[in-house]
Image (cartoon, rainbow, N blue to C red; front, top):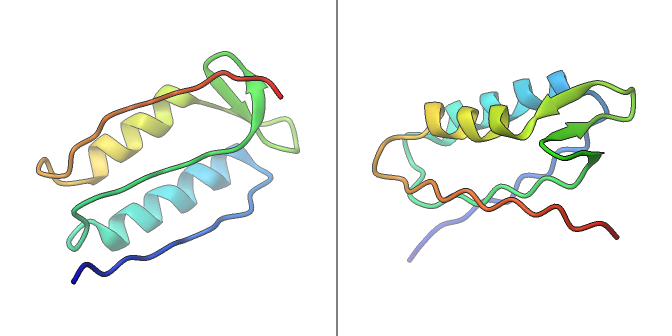
Length: 84
């Protein structure tokens, strides 16, 4: 049986989001075999923006995931720029 965990983060500052993401990745990296990260945010192409106007590049989010997870956990980036 596979165990799973769902973690939701409400964030308003992009740098705090990055720190929280890194902390959660560090916490799960020894037991993680599959990871899905969904980020809903406003911004512009290539960046997400916090409510306070702070920005974080999407590439930085992808790099955090790649740097924190072991090599056997596949990282397949999918980024959508759909506007609703």
